Image (tube, rainbow, N blue to C red; front, side):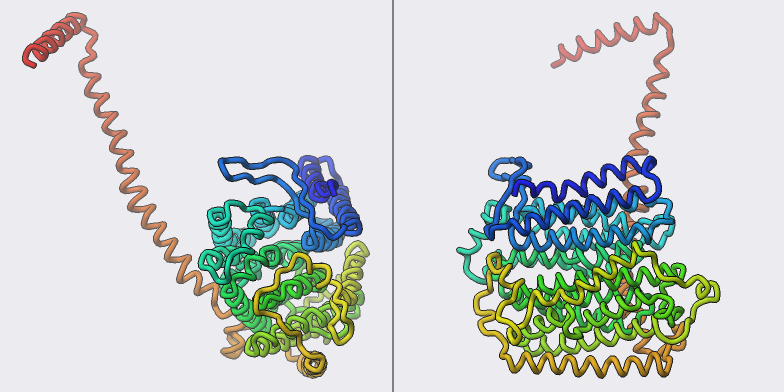
Length: 629
């Protein structure tokens, strides 16, 4: 297990070599080197997985921070949860790195892009391996930095820079809450190490105010990183980055960091049912809210972005009802099919010369047969078509939620219907009908090179069979993922006492398949047979369509309520406090020194007689002063 340090070491070495050797690494050398480093981490992760004995182990590398009673070692924790995340991060990361070799081959900053990707993987591995909250927070901040760098990778575009700044600032809001939670945790338990904090927390009664405060502050961090209401608006704008970035960071890994953190802290959350209820409500609202927005988006990546926000909401609902392993099940399957969908979207964008508007696509299934096939699999998987991965994990969430809250169940079920509607809308508008782009685009339509399509095929296979790691009880009593994660899961008291009946599960699966069949037929008739193409102009849209197309005007609301008042406040301070008052004081002191110097200079005449007179006068004045006193 001492080899655990090699897992993050390989991407770090890859980052250093590609960063400092950019000028010497020609062609695709940087891509091959970066991909090989992540693949080496994946091989190490597989070795750790197959040699894992079932008992958590902590490996301390060195003593990092020591101050009084505060002792923070730089150490790694290897257990079931970290192993699962290692396989996801390094496995999906390797495929996306390989895909990027083809996608970014014509970019002048090829090596810089791969150095950023390697740095991100390093910080993500640091996040999931840390044995205490400070190491986790270091990785947490690191992936935020890499997200900023990669979203604004094409920094000559001002809009992309704005998107990067937005992501960075909104994540800082959440991170402040996370940091305050860590500080309160240390004040309460005297430690930030997982083992000491969790052992102490097991002795605390449920719903204690301090535990609720800690878990709520930690969840604020998760809301920022995992894009939940109200800190979700940065994620759709983050699509400004290259498509592989969207797949790796904003679909499969970084945005699931909040889910990982809550599952890692499940001992704390299990004794804070009030916080869990809040998480379930926020997750439900986010899932529904983002799904409705996705219904009317026309940017292929924006549809997938809001889909990601919605699916993250599903995961948080699972956390909110105490189904921690179910949430991780959906994290895993979602990583497969959402990475697949983003990379397939990148293949489409690559084929049409950078176009992302689905209103200007259509008829691509003949020109892009492999991309179409894998996009179809991804769409079926996220919609919950059996036996693909999304069917098992999504239905499991619905089954778990139904046992706790019928209201949340029906909202999520309706959201599931919306998911299928906007995904088949996306599929049919992109790949069916006639091509609606320019003649130049039509002339250059072509399938992506094999370096891009092979990762798509492998992800399609994972999206097809990945769900079998979590079969429902009607098929098998052995839920492989639940059994694997069981040693690190602490179930909340009073929750998940009973499992749904077999009859209910059959009804749930049957009704899901029936509704999905109706949605597919309806979508095909609407977008293929009737060719109902969304309007290119807002003036032709209905009021509801316009509201959804503009994302409920939430960005405009945030701008009016927060951004503009803060800018006005800053302008006021700059004009009246900074320039008028502070600069006035500094300027006044400066003028006083200059004026004083000019006055003193008048007595510097150079006349020796005057100097002798002044000296004698001074001595007499001192003597008289002493005599009078």
